Length: 361
Image (cartoon, rainbow, N blue to C red; front, side, top):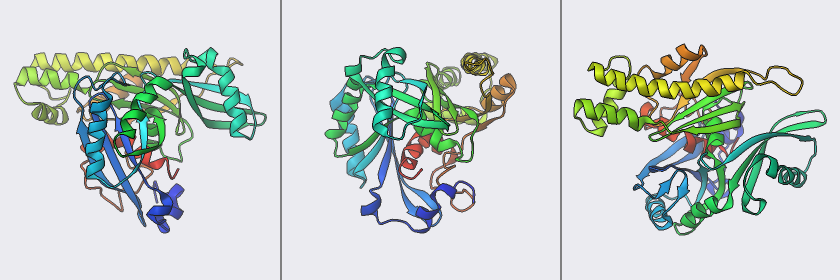
């Protein structure tokens, strides 16, 4: 039963809510807050509530909270409309440092955290007193353990925490957005290297993951709004109508010619960035001079991913399989449950779905 094997016991024997302490997944960007919660059923972890609130310009800028009161007010609105108290919350890549580290195999979390602390000055230009960090174990090879380290500036996290403390939500964990995405769209059976492209409204996140663990992440200042603005300019339509045109015509059947040129120019700029990071990874070598495992597949996700022809264009340029990620990959099988949200809308909730899965994977 595809996508359910890791949560089989929880699916067959759903725990009482007071024991499972179910969390909402809350994904915050510069433009909006996406909220998702779910419940355990015999079919898997089934989405229950899809919700979102738009953020005014200037509330969150490049991932940094600039107006704590305004963010808190938006969160209060979500809290009042829903009944989840606890939340797993994503933090954007813009100001986060992600690196891999090989350490002697040890068994205690305390020892690993101490090794990371000593490594900070070499890998993250954040003073130790302003650093919050965590790790995921990538793999163990005898006496060596490879880990992925995520470092957040404390002052950035503080802005989010203050907003949540005033909202009613209780944060269980802050997590790197790329980690949530990888957990959402990458099957638990996948062990190779994948590239995940999160195509948002104002920016695009590029993540390289080994299995479900991100080992590289960056952000490109190209997003779906560039397509929308071009369509609005040439067709004199609303943003909503422009979104429909993106889905139905995209870069394949666009008219007039001037619009096609605008869309293709934006697409080429985005694909050039993806290609640059793809080549960077695939030409890397380890300490012995051997090629590092290549990228085997590319997943596209994010609210602006539905530009017709985009997946095919990326695949043609990179000569690697490209697919639009299934947001529900590890929550339930689409053969057994159809969520009450369209496939197009579901792409916006990839990060929130990965935050939900943190409690069960």
